[in-house]
Image 1 (cartoon, one colour):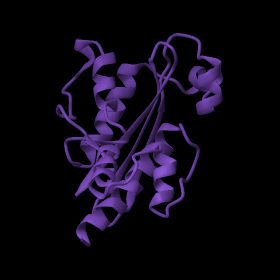
Image 2: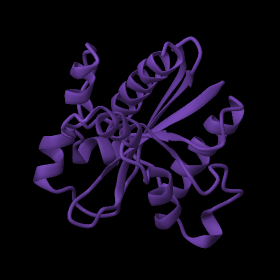
Image 3: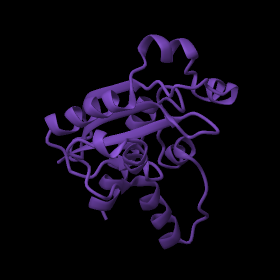
Length: 178
């Protein structure tokens, strides 16, 4: 089965989307077949904190940025073209809902993601609870607990989406082998 792993980067304090990242991953093989990185122009200045955290600059937004509607249409086409599971995979949940909430009702053309998402962080937290382990850590730290290394830049939406998928695939392997 293929799944779309999705991540967003948001400006602060407004919470407006500034980057959408996604990958198409095969849950059986762990192979990532496609990657997508879209810059979104929030029509406001980026906060210094977000520039430092994400590495996304005003120049990136002005030169590569698009409207949220156009970014959504690109993501929608990406998701549908690969016949993936309806619900996207996320780390911490809510990214698809955030896109939905920020789009105007007229711009939510044929919403492809259903009403839910697959949350890899919830799966991790559930495993910790079941084993009586402390629940702590973000994506990169959790990956080290699975003897994995985060690849790419943290807080880059495409890199976060890819690492989320890689961790989720490892979790699936462990579940299958139990």
